[in-house]
Picture 1 (cartoon, rainbow, N blue to C red):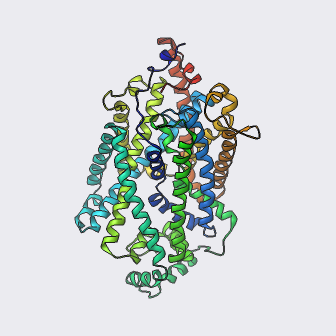
Picture 2: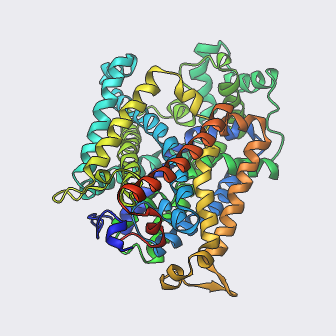
Picture 3: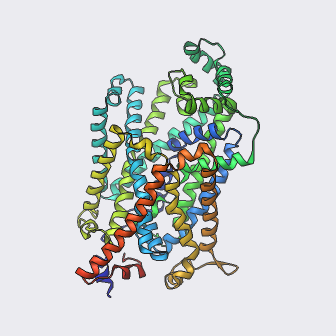
Length: 530
């Protein structure tokens, strides 16, 4: 069967708008250590108070490098938009590849709603920092907040429709402002070492009527049952590594639009954009947690994190217990706080446009292989964008935003970390077997490199698989983590999504074969055209 009959057309129609640096920033802000680490720090401090967080982050960086390397090598071998869908469908099984990436997108859709909320929240905080106190009215009313979110999601979609070159320009500005903000926070926290305790006591006394509120919260946590910090432990340090998956999980986000990255066939390009992004994001987070340990004090931070997560009624202060909120205790300069909030807002602003890119490139790839209607693979000849796929995902994003605000669905679906590990795990396994199951494509690729006769991509695949399995084991071994990783409802959804997607694939295959005389299985013997 000819290639042009199997695929929707002879060429993808997409253009290469991303350079290596652009892809690096995309991956860095997909992890977004400035924002993503906020909850990870709190959660790991509460659950693993004896874990050494800096060492835990270094272990996470090592694991992230292994995972990013598998993606970098596979991207070089098959540099097409759709990324890990292309890898798993060509190496393992077409139906499994579709199910795994659709399943991953399901959870990312929930992130889009959270990302919209974060962006609006930090916009309001920035506006308040420059004296616009009335901005809080946006988040005070759910209907106003919904409208603001819809506007933001539509704007995000229009940016991507206009072409990735425009997104790249916006991303660069946001990246610069975000890095400036991160540098200010980290350096300022270190510089204020020795001032936090008296400043916190002065601030908190109004709410606790205790002149030593710092130690009051440490004692309160112990009285409520917190085991507290008793010394660093290797087992809990590995637990910290597992929790850092909350934001270290997507150093390879750019793989999904690999067909639109210049020189994506070069392993060096992908290692720099993926592996280096994971290293830098991890080091930024390690610097931040190091500042927390030095300035806030680890016993204090673990105690207040545990109180906030387990007994929020005992946290009686006007500010929340996240390290970014506590930062206001030691920094009151309006100009500094305005710059920091601007950086926080811009770091958040790119998230929904990134989600739109992510969703639409998967949708495009599924459609290009004829799994979804071919209209979703249409590319506007002037804008060079898959407009239909983008519009579909904007609508789906607005639906998720509505569900996020007006229903309790997010609290049900929040326990989804294991769900987000399945696609990277399958991609890691694909990396292990790629040289053996797809020898023709492997032999013709630029990644044909070996160590003592073992393909390099196989070696990285083995280590990445081990890393992911260790984390999954930790999430199922600790009761405090199971609620974050997978609930009964989420477990049923995972199974249900896979069953439905696999069944759908074979139904579509049978339909195409009967009605159009096209066996879509033929597409998966080849890498899609550029």
